[in-house]
Amino acid sequence: KAGVTQTPRYLIKTRGQQVTLSCSPISGHRSVSWYQQTPGQGLQFLFEYFSETQRNKGNFPGRFSGRQFSNSRSEMNVSTLELGDSALYLCASSLDADSRRVSYGYTFGSGTRLTVV
Amino acid sequence: GNSVTQMEGPVTLSEEAFLTINCTYTATGYPSLFWYVQYPGEGLQLLLKATKADDKGSNKGFEATYRKETTSFHLEKGSVQVSDSAVYFCALSQGGKLIFGQGTELSVKP
Image (cartoon, rainbow over all chains, first blue to last red; front, side, top):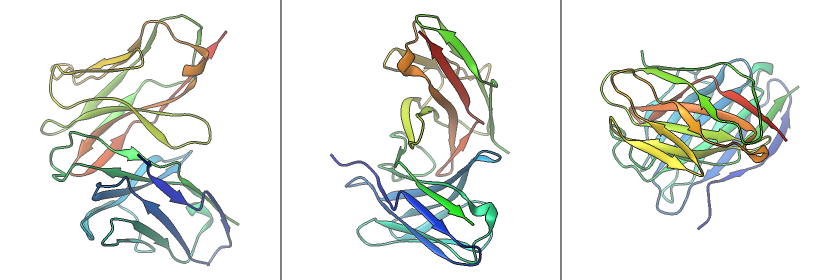
């Protein structure tokens, strides 16, 4: 059974540009979440999608956006990149349909390492 | 708000030593609790989980018990190996998202 697949693995962008990251969840998982990992702030929640709808959102500026397609694949977009957006972006999928009660947990991908120069 | 606090690292142990990584949480309601492990250059791997009070999660020799009375979920292993060297994250679930501790780096020397 394939795991969570994130592409690309590495990305270098220039300040002011925009970037799109992709995540393919485990087959059958309809919940997809995104996290940002930095040395200073640790792991922070960006947003969660379930059945093409954003179900939860973290405290990030509007430059960070996402979407989910009918096959549960998800993309996140960051516009007007800043140096501080350099981070490892992790995607996670879950079999849990009810966000109020997490039983199965979340399976993470290997992440996309974004460097903004 | 909900939060997770882990003991600071790095933790350095000799092979076959006993491991404890402390984790305490603050939460409303009864969240599920998780331990994740991250090896260099990789994403997070679910190590174990517990979904209700007094549940014990276990995997690969690691154990943690959901203690509601002390709001803790300490990770233990009786005999660590060099291959256990990694960063360990304690986390709780809240409304569809995970709240993580700051991570504890473990280094096991032969």
